[in-house]
Length: 487
Image 1 (tube, rainbow, N blue to C red):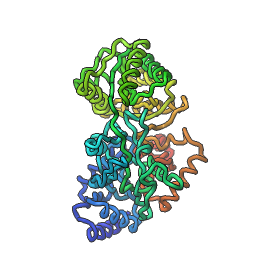
Image 2 (image 1 turned 90 degrees about the horizontal axis):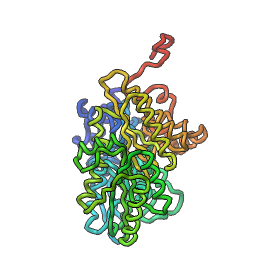
Image 3 (image 1 turned 180 degrees about the vertical axis):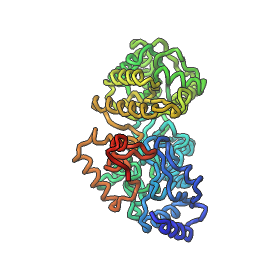
Image 4 (image 1 turned 45 degrees about the vertical axis):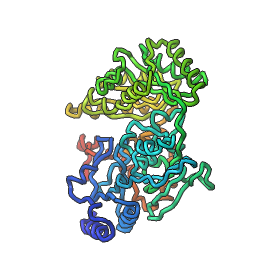
């Protein structure tokens, strides 16, 4: 990349957008070198933080005209490296595009910019008796644009689904510079579902500039409990039995002993740290139905060996339960200074086997693994902890994380439920998809981005990425043996 090309772009940008929206200083650019996946880092050549939709469109078109690669970034809370910058390109940050443009309480929709924080939308529509259902653990910080990129779900996805079920339309700035609307303000827009194609595409098909969100009425009541078990297997079987009884909880979350301990130390919420595992289960809806099902669920917990059940007596206790659960990722720092979080999915019936397998991997590797996850839909979030200051531990943690994904695939599961592929799991894609599948994905991506400059190297495997690990350079085995050299 020639310096003159960057200088020319910066000069062009300064003539059409605010100079305050352009970050050139090296230390400031390095602050954007990674998202929540800290093991992969790259510093962009220029960071652009537009203060309006018009600035964003103008800036991206200038980058396209300059022939430079670019990556979009929201709040940077992603966990798969989907917002990892291109060290030969430009980073476009949407965090300042944070306006709620319209709330229509009658139609139950809101139109927002991509930088609106997830939880802030629910707060804004609360006076109308409405809320936005997707609730990732990072909802106090993550943005709706990022939720669209990753098709985020959250704890209540078992009943309410993922972002794709709650976004009706999007305005998309294509990698060609064209602005298009996909979907609309209703559930069934005419034509092919290109809206659904873009949601979950991890920013590889363009930048979302406006979003039409579907809102839901607040449920009449919510009832929440934490059930404690002497074994993870018993808790997993209780989950399957609840669903088999025809009960659809709003959320079913599981934590193992290590996760319970860490979360309680971090929050003081009142969890029983002597338990081997626990389930956090919530029902919501019409009062009569919820009360009857809640009674049945409590009985099922005891039938499956729950030592005791903590039922939230009021909203304060309910908030404490969720505070503990949503603190899990941060709380893992009390176990070790670093961790790798996985995001595999398995059938509910396979949960006991997979959790036992994860336990064996932890013992064999001598690494502590915290299990905290969406048990209702089998979306695992094992946290493989390690100390980067101890030689070899990070590599060992990466090996364990890869083996966990293999466990999931061997059980007929998936590489990801909501965190995405990014760069973290891109080289595992052939383990799940055939060459024909990947070729079809590539053709679709090429249709949106014919010059292949938008968030390149993410989601779909390439020989470069799968032969070289992005981030810190690791010598190839041929180099180690003296049979080859890097050039």
